Length: 339
Image (cartoon, one colour):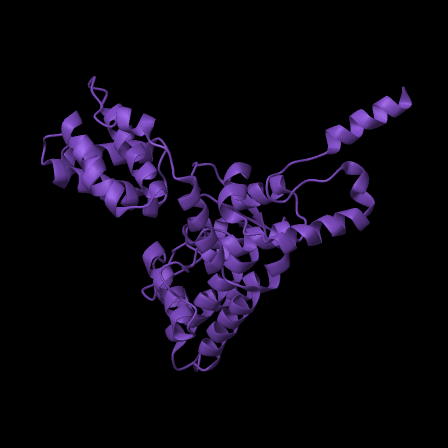
């Protein structure tokens, strides 16, 4: 049976086991479970589950949202393990509408921030702290500088904002030129090389120390709020989204997470191996290819022609979209020629 206390226990158990990690994912799970709880009002039978699927989910949400919701609901009842799962059959039979999924992907592609928009955002954030007298308003100067720093780091390395705000000063290894991100969806920490932004990071740390040392105390967080405590996920998003709104490039589908999508796509356009991209961005290659790469046909043609002209052509073509490689075909062909 679904109750408010059971929902809380389920989310707590999943967080402890690193199955659900980010605050946004936790909120999403809770929202879906609470919506079903209100609908069934304690009568969580197979009949009510079918009604919920037909009257609410199928009519109000996209097929991908329906699939995700069914996954959450089925997971909850599997976790309870009381011998009955009203959503097991529904979830098993349900299939995503491929045409609708393609349309949604096209919409997501159209929302990706462009390089010029990111440059505009960075320049605007910089102009904010340049207008502030750092001696008269040290905290205001720090906050504006911090926001500029966040945008730069996310655009350069594609980390999640939740991962960046979770970084402590001690997580930065200046000699090795990297920082460790502990907040990942699978619970496994991963390294982010920071060679290209070493001077920016050092400059930010100096501003943080000089402007916030009197109120931050022994706080080890890299990013601070105006009270000197660790900056929260929500506050960080609002600060960056506010800047994006002020220059007219923000809407609900173009949040700070778009900086992560931009960087993944740019890495791929620059011919960085997919395995390396997945490692330094803390995600799997399948998720990288399915969700984060926004490549046009022109990108594919340009990458192919670049490969064709490079000395690495002998290694075989690897499609940037699907990961297909003809290396094995080339090797088999060469083997037949030798024979």
